[in-house]
Length: 417
Image (cartoon, rainbow, N blue to C red; front, side, top):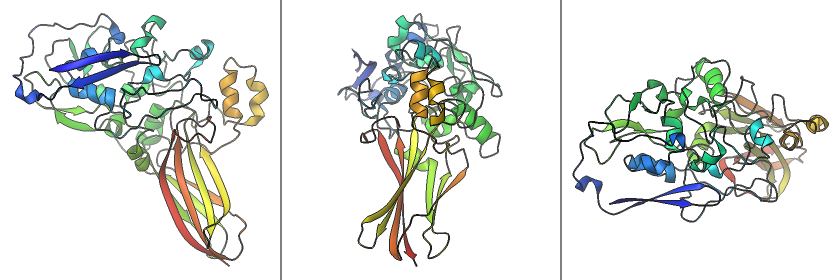
């Protein structure tokens, strides 16, 4: 028997699935109904557990991250640690970000700022939408659900339900619900509405789809779509209890910034001493694998390059660090704009970004960024150690490292004359 339990928790609508030890393979398979028996009167507010009754494996991936290496961590919304994303004990630590979308307390766009940060219903709670054209010049936000419908979070129906009530999918097949085959669902346009906003501004936050299209696809760096990395494919039945053939299906994992595998395959780090005997170093940060900038998405995301020089006794004699992060607005973050920020409707968030001052821009697809450092060192033998760290929220107290991931290290022995 297959059981589904729903737990309503203060922070989010958490979906919990329980499987018995009875093998599905031992059960007789059902024929696909000849008539439509499943409709979606709740629209995109339809709980994902409804879809999970038939699509068990995909639901398990979505709700629990089965098969992925994402590790959801507690993420504070402010240095005080208040209003953060926390995960109850009955929720897998590998749960996908899409499943926990309704738990994210961070505001996304102006409408959320006007609501004092209490709603993220623009992308986290969209109404059913049609997919945009690949070459659209500007990405507009999808229509948001009503506030009353927000408890549903980001559901299966958010992506799969069309405005006319059909289920969008990559195959033309018979199902208990109306099926709408759409090959575009296997392309990056499926992700465009929620993972980009407005027109392309290099360096700005929430530009992931446009970064992929303009910096990766159009530059000839590759032909992969978002799903090729973030939704690895498998062969399986789409609905386990029905007599249907195995098909190629995408795993509903969306591994990203919480996945060590994604981070390690995105950036590489090389440390060199360009002039032998001199106290001068270069750090080459190379976007070798991401089809977009790194870090991408929210301006909260950051990658730190941290460097240390150790003497022959292992004592640290010099330190330096750099931060790569998206801009909050359409210009570089800078303390020079703090007074102007106070006049903005989103002053709190603009000030938060500009208060950190100038920082390194995000690393575009295929880019090699070179950072030079010339610390003052006495003649002798040294070891230069460097590392890349991914941070889910750069505005946290730096002492709070629970939402950070170390994903790349280097070590170089050098001689200074």
